[in-house]
Length: 446
Image (cartoon, rainbow, N blue to C red):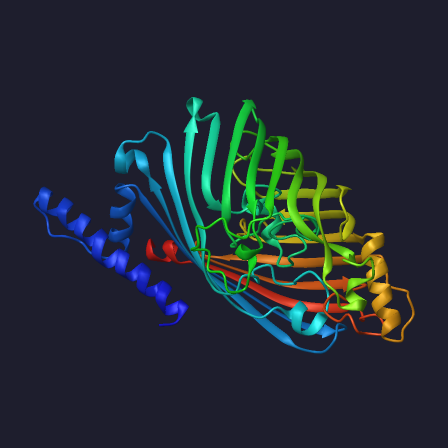
């Protein structure tokens, strides 16, 4: 049985065996005939404290010009999840278990046709069936303190905003990309052991800190996430945030202003040197292994206009500034700036149109490595220090369950991570993309 069929069977078995039985018991107690429709199954589970999630995200991309060659690529993700309300199930007040499994499949256009270091399809990565989340969450102090522990990822808890994924490029969605180039920041769905705490210190003000295992085995292509071993771990990473945040329920013009960063105590490869002091990419020797690097970021988003307080129509702006503080890293700093208009044409209150541009500024070590490779290939050492990625995207909400987002992306000065032996620069690339999401649970509940 393939991974896709396995996921479908798992979900079907759970819904067809457990939930109808619960529904039948309730109906029998009330003297009525049991209802075993999909909607009744979901509602019965929710009443018992089991909230199911089932969705599919697909992202297609093709380069119209530039890059290495004209190609198209498609990547997709099945997401199956459940949140277990332990108050309803076992009488544990404010306790919740989180569970999610993903199946990712398909190809990355950046890998096969662009040659740059950042995918134009954010859903690509960890292309298998994977245990993504298995955590216990407990709220204390009247909800002011939120603790969670188990197996999960840093990027779904930190440096993350719903506004980022109005776009398809992985340079912005799901997180500003530099954090993955300069640290062992763990990413979805490659789960590792973790614990985090978030406390609300005053109205809309919060402090957030966590620790995540750094383990290269958890990011290996053949890892399925179901291993609970610490074997292979090289250290830990501690992300943190202090910030202010409001939403549409608490503010006419919601905003977030967050100062954050990371303390990385996991092992990593030097971007340039091998164990003998040579240039690893040229000598072919093992890279020098280092330990310890830190970074900081400041991020914000602000709704600027909201004509109707009963609607979320309006214009929002967002931005991120990120910089390396210590360690030998791939990128020195990163800047991201974007705008999103929610509510476009008449009757399209949930549609969005947005534009984002970001700058990845490579470190001296990374440029030295790229130039050495360029020289070895017979070219000139003139690699550009900054890679700019930008995207124009329209998001159309089709009913309650389906969202589509055609987009156009432009990559200025693609780096040569995917084509290190080229003697000349990779041409700037124009990419057309198409992203869609189907929330199967909302389809079932229609």
